[in-house]
Length: 259
Length: 272
Image (tube, rainbow over all chains, first blue to last red; front, top):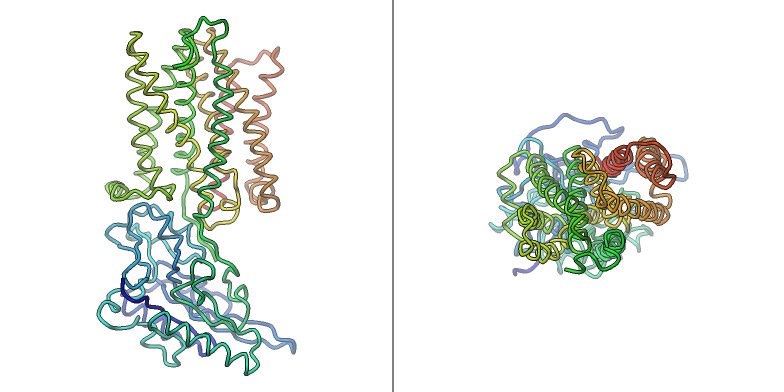
């Protein structure tokens, strides 16, 4: 396994130019879509099967009544423990040697289980191909020594690409500096590999709490439920089984008895 | 911001018929192992019904993929922690057991019966699996209600049991075999399954608390309360317990089946 790669999106540097969104569309040859009115400059409301990078425009009311813009270029988090990857029954969703999560389009069979298993609602079903789509971390580019198109094009270095450990250290310094400058709510999201989902390989610096950005405060791995729920189902099976045995058992020793 | 998997009626039918397949099989296998010769009708009907339903289930899943041949992609890998991966494999393995049990149930030969009981003893595990794993599959997602419902697998299993038994008794009734002891026993087992399902449903709702709102007070609420609770559980149980009512035996069985379908429908449509 090669050294894990990551993207660090520092939202404090984002100017909402959407160059990342365009670069992603261009490089990945993603077709145009009908625009959606979202009430702000943001377009679309959420990722789609044809939009893998999305600049979120969040309007936060200030104490003086004015609105403050929080800008965030959002993307697939390439979770260290990825719900979509665990859910995929074909093996189409796999982890690359760089630690990123990718969907092999030839293998995906369109079951859509991954769509419901992403804690961030990233994976989207493509009705044209009948397969699931999401950010590929520009798989073709990183295998040729280039960073993802979004990071490459970002004019303010809000999106940075590099080795995960180096970027995380950089992010720690940056958040400390912002705190010092008075941005008390500045915080990292997904940078800690001991945190939720084992850390996110696309992690963020946010200027407010995660829920302000429509991010879950503590994303959970869906597969955590499999064991407990299976045990409960086995318990139910035993009770139902006993009920049926009692109903069918032949009394008086005339029957065939146990098998 | 979460996303729905766009599972619709094909999946609702699959969950419903998969429950019947599992429930009918384990009912037949228990009747086979613990019952007597008078239960032969139940045994044969249960096994064959299960086999047919498994066939339909496979077709529903393949149709849902849009491109049928892509179903083969499921067979590239086996992930023991992934309900959908295990489910795809187990449907095939269970189909094999249902086939063998069905074929061996056609003859009255005692040696075949002994072999059939041995096979069914293993097959029963797959029957329980198919009836319940679809619930666990839903709870292993990121979506609210589904992932909050610790008893989804148990509830689907209880419903698979009650609908599987109801389907057997309906078929016995339709084939004019409703006077025998076997028919009475299925009805008795179904009564227990319905009571158990009501208990599980109450616990299911209690554990969910306000998270159950999409089922209990949203657009789906009339179907949930009217269709599942009243029509599908309370009325058939009341008819059964009150006894003396002059209701044809076919009515409660049909109501239980309707309720079982509505359960899968309202749960799947919560995130359709």
